[in-house]
Image (cartoon, rainbow, N blue to C red; front, side, top):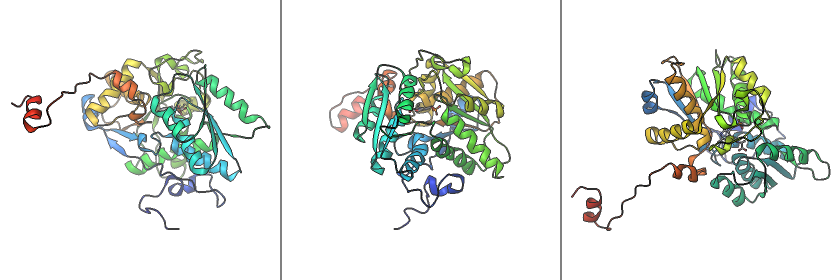
Length: 359
Ligand code: F0G
């Protein structure tokens, strides 16, 4: 078989030494990883921080960072002889699981909180052929159900939520890419937090690189939750989480302890940002940087904007904000915040010039 695009090795090949892959692990890839790290010059200037970078995870195959973990979880499921996978999801995990399961020829079951999945994500699960079950509860309820189902013996099925350790292993590669691109670790890694797997995964990646001597220092981990769904900030589960950022509408994160460890061991913080701050950051990223992320992703930038305003950041700090998912997944929320301004014109030079106010 030819080596496809050897100049851009896939995540699993590039970081093989850091991943639990063996000769027996099947190769599954949709081209995940190697996402852009983009300097946010205009946004950074607007808040007095010249060294802000965006890790654009929405450019993964299904449009979110979940693909990094899913490629590993599905490869390991195949290696173990699984025939089907299951997950609970606020949308992105189900889109990713459905895609990788399709590519691997596995059955996929997704259990979703009714009415709270962005339209693009639900569409992805459906087009990839997953069996979609909607429950009249929230993500936490759905996760409890799939955990229990995956432990029953009568219907063997592999759980691919981030409680599956292979998910975390795959997702830590984003930390490697950031260090490889910058030539060092950032001072601050800012990231949205929902079920808390990703902050845990990044922290593990930075620790792996420091242990290996690839980087001398590790960043402070700054996690941001939506204020209506901020259990880690409050220090107790939230029974009825609510936020416009449906991806992180989670009241009892499964990776609670490892997220708190990442925060404390890095000298970091986990704070809350309001829906208003999230939507403001969402718009500013588009308006100033040409980057369209989904609302939950903008929590990382909302938190940095707040910290800059509160003068909690050294202006020289090297800050990386993780933009976890693509804005096209949730057109409904994006459109709701827009003044749609489309002017009709005749299909002629004179007509368009007139519409532009040039004549
Ligand atoms: N950003 C996006 C776009 C997400 O989809 C998620 C989680 C997060 C941030 C938070 O990451 O859970 O590792 O702390 N989405 C999960 C899902 C829960 O089902 O798609 P986390």
